[in-house]
Image (cartoon, rainbow, N blue to C red; front, side, top):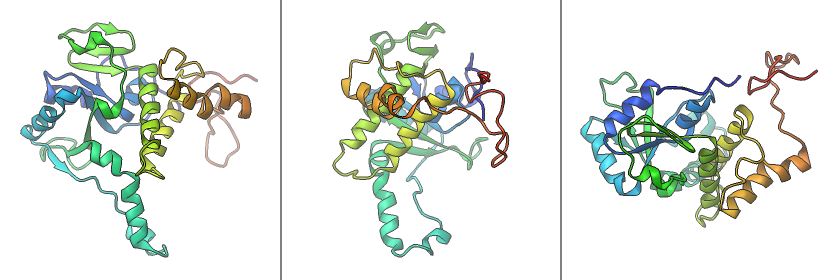
Length: 259
């Protein structure tokens, strides 16, 4: 798959979430934010200021959303092949326990066009770690762009640098959690960073201005300068068809391949 151009306006899903939660300021997060930047992936996740979190949850309920416990079950077909199914179920629950305890997930209202096909996860920013500048704290209804964010009324879309910093800090938080010896959530976050590096103009200097030395080091070792020194640059080639051995004339970012 190849990246799409960055959006220049809100998609319908994000716009609706903003309307449900208005006038609270919201920050599209995870795949929803990545999709805006051009990554071909969509999962509905948003973050809000910590002080707005409980009110945001209540506003969703008042709009017909139904709070649920995320389904982390393993399919019966797979369980049947495992030597200890109960242990497997417990391990999967433990891998996402920090995510599930720190966020809330909602089903869309029954008559909504996304009902049954998509869920909405809401996170406080103390969990999402989006580096929010002071200018956004007191945001007013306008369509101006602020460095690091595209702003549409009460919706603040984090751009590449802010989003990568957010994901990396979340990985570090997850690694420092003594109850998360092995975390499927941490792996997912790391995969999101890798996906951004592949599809977007996220290069090894993306966090050079970040003040968190832990985040700078993690990114450098995992995907940035130190990683490239050891393993070379990321392979962004795209196969025309799985197993064909043939490649598209452009890479995942849409840039022409050099001969």
